[in-house]
Amino acid sequence: MLSFFRKLSIGGKIRDGLLPDSVMGTAEDIVRAKSQNELVSKDETELKESIYDLLRTIKDPEKPQTLEQLDVVYEDCIAIQEATPGGVTVIRVEFNPTVPHCSLATLIGLCIRVKLERHLLALFKLDIYIKEGAHSTEQEINKQINDKERIAAAMENPNLRELVEKCIQEEE
Image (cartoon, rainbow, N blue to C red; front, side, top):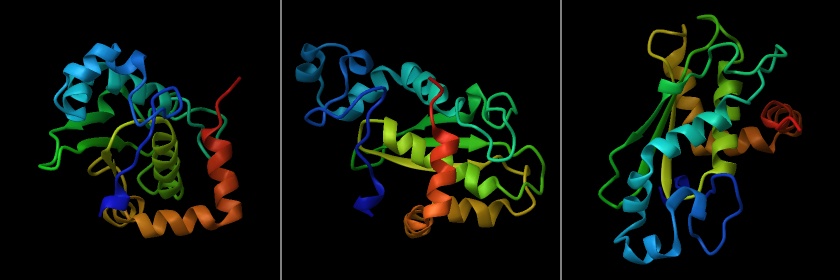
């Protein structure tokens, strides 16, 4: 279960396992905070905005538009849920495929997961779901995109990994 939790960073590299100053404030805030969970909740709105900024730039695998332009992700699709008893923050992302039978919904979920795992810092659990009632096979897809073994196997496939990298690549 512990391998499910990740150490990631928002807009920067991990340095000594601490959140960047832009996310949590100053070094004094670190000393005064009783837990990392306190730091995350302090800036919940900023965290949600940062996550949305990351998601909105992901490109659709079939179309030249981004997920934001296609209304697959939207500002209210991100929820920072109450921390687990172990103090791990739960980030829930819900997305809305363009059609109820979208054949690439699993790939879109994988792109969302990979991009967030590479850019967020904190111990957290990431839950990614299709908006309820928005896809004909949402339960099966939700199970796939939240299963660590399936995700690892998918990212070992060179063709799939290349497609994911292309979708999450930032415009310069």
